[in-house]
Image (cartoon, rainbow, N blue to C red; front, side):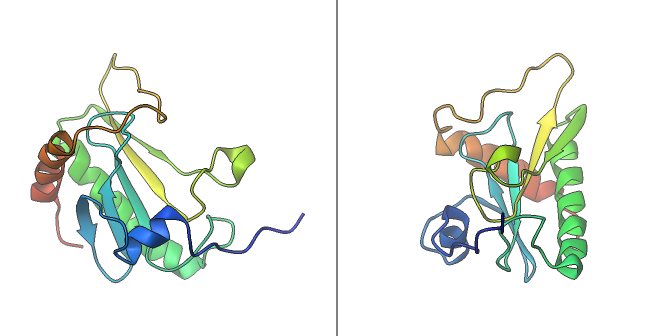
Length: 144
């Protein structure tokens, strides 16, 4: 079965165009990172490319190399800023693989020993809570 075409109306495309607000953690010409509004853990960040790609299966390999450098940098900042014991990085592809937003993105989820992840379908976190985590992560970011 062929992969469906990229849909310019997905929520992340709207965020990239500035049509929907986000709590920005990082932005350059390659990527945008922002706080997940339904975090599975405190400090959950999403990182996506600015170029259109439905998922990793149709993404340009050169762009992926540039994007993963940003994912790594942001993951390090999240771990440091929140004194996390570890980091889980998730990336889903197609509905059967768990993908629900069809723009390539990585989840950076800080982890602490003994703390169970929350469901990703819960209520949205309060903006002031997300903003407090955002400030800490931004302060810990290192230049690429």
